[in-house]
Length: 638
Image (cartoon, rainbow, N blue to C red):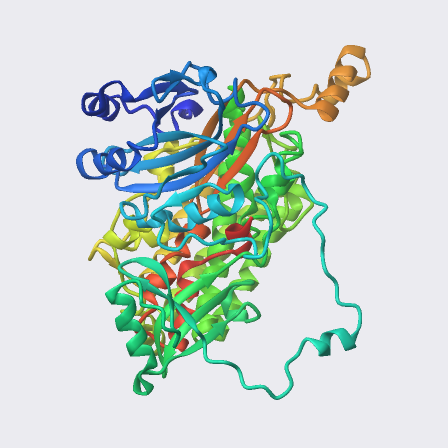
């Protein structure tokens, strides 16, 4: 039987050559550390932009996938400085005020198939760092999120505003001194107080500002008649254009209460007639504070929170979190559990793509396709219910394996699903592939290039639509994916993607998922053994031991009430979700609860493409563009 790649090698953080080249250029200004097979380089903030340019232009790290932060409040002296890292030529413990914040940057090189993490330490009294949006535009949203959640300022960011919380919000929720909950919530109790807030027969004022995308950056431009001099010539030209009656535009809101926004998403569109001039996604309406809540749960209890993010592919959330904790704890997973994880995740991939294709078609007018897709999705949900007892929020995977083995009749149910889906996929292709209305509404609409996708940190089918053959199941395999035979569909004809190409690839991916499911089912029927690790650090004793061993009973009780304590450190584990790279950064401070859980969700990054491709199209095209990104708002807001 083929053996899966060890977990510490699945994310390819071991990058000796790039680190050596950075050391040649920056001498002693770097501090390199290794933990669980991951390379982290600590630098000073003054050198950060220069190092980022070298990584992109000279070494080949073409994507900056994620930016996040850690708050070491009340633990700053021991947590961020495990190896005596130097900061401004002084040991961290020797500083008058120890560093409280740690900003982490995750880089990816497709050509080297390697990852690299940069980190910058910041004092509480001066929490600011240079923005890297001019080098990697795709971290625009990520830097805004760190500013919103931690209060760390990114100097030079083109639009440093809150992104999840209201502008009127006080404080920064992910700081350690910001308690969970207890925020005041205003309720309206009667119709009189509601009506009192409504203007009576007052015409809406003309908007005094608008948000545009200028050279790839979101920019707020004020349009006033005040005597203030415009800050730049570009602002002056836009003001003049705006005040010209012949160029008058209108701000139209699409959402958040609109079925075609695929959730509570608001898109502010600046319209010139039917044409979109500028578009800005406005998110945060579904902000649930999942990352904050995880800090108050033991590692095992936090699993149930992961389902609630990308609720169309909850098993991928379970898997990414469990893999990260398993890497942190150095836990091996039994082979039967590995097979079950792969099999169920691929069924979940198909069910997610069914929603993506069905809603995309319905938004453009092909309502029948939506009905067919949801009909087939019910069969996938039946399988999840059979295995876990829940149709959507399964919480089936556990740290070290799976919650329980599959019941009798599982294999027959999966075989019926495979046979049915093979026929259905052919029907979908016959219905849409050459449908003249579908082709006219999707081909050549929402065009973006490979350079756009890389710059905007886009991953998944949208990146493959630009001709880049990149899928973590192949390039950086996990859970034994390297032992399965399957292909990665991608655009082989050009380096540009559009709505049609994204649809085509998702349909082809469903076919490849069926190939994986068939192989996994065959292996499952020939592989016996447990579905949970025998490592008692993370898994409870078998139930048969509880009746005969008091020690086992005590261990079981303490494991479920207190949990386990990983070593000090942090790890990053990524999986290929239906929407792209889903990454979990888990930081441990040595206690039984995570110090920090950050989730790099593909929907959050992919949504940035909307403002880039929308100008020039119409409102009727906008619903197709939103569907092309295949966002899930629970995934975006977390």
